[in-house]
Image 1 (cartoon, one colour):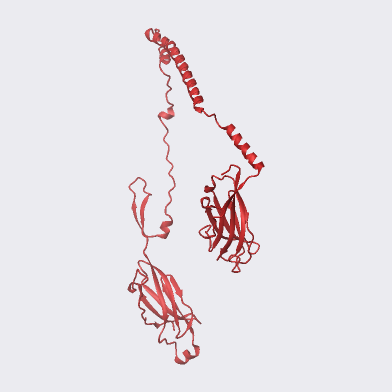
Image 2: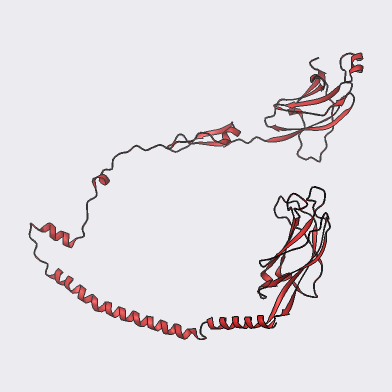
Length: 386
């Protein structure tokens, strides 16, 4: 490639398909923002179209041709805030520089739109053509490029840097030798008086014996009295926190004292209960009698079913006598189970119990596979408050 050539990257935004509606009116007004190597371009807005067609080309200048393979081209789609409340994100696409082709070899490729985060609601795809074009630079730019290269050549180090390094090392070696010679000459002069002092030590009088010892031995100072006999101080006990959030969630736990010297520390093993889903499917009632015959014909009340397991209770919808509910009521049961599941049929007009049935939870069949279907069964209803 000629040194005076420049490269342009051309991105053609063709169209998009099946975009997510973002303007609250089951449509979207999309536009694209293209980023490459610190440069940004924007397309026009296609109003109220989930399958917009742009057919627009945007150009980017490639500053470093050799490193184009490491660059990233990013295309982001947004819903125009002029139509909606804000510029909502419609999806993005990232393309690596090593996938760019020369002009003439480009093809239309559809890329699926990616999410910006886990919570983004994105769908659809975008059709793009990406290619580059090499053009000859004008004479002014070519001269400027030649001048930059000449300046770089001047700033380069000499062709034979090894010779200069060898000279510097030789100078360092010579300086070290001179310093070592000076040190050897000074050593015997310093050691000579010490030997003479050892051979002929001066006589020390008894009255000045302490001074002589201090001159020949290193001076040591006795430790202060506080260090020898430190005062006894009472240790401040740090406050200990009794109980945690786990104690509130799991009130029953195995406890044992620790083997250390702090009796406040106790080891605990929290018991996590085994949980089951209990599903009650309310289908219908049969041969239900409400008060006297004439009263039942006149009233024809609406009924609902109420089920209770411990502190949990759920209700079905209202239906007339003889109709079916076909509703599921789901409870969370913990071992050990509550003893009884109470099912009550109540009158919607006065919320009074009409009839009820009780079933022992221990007698309910358990299953670990949802695919296994259980047979329905009838429960005998007993009169309620009335």
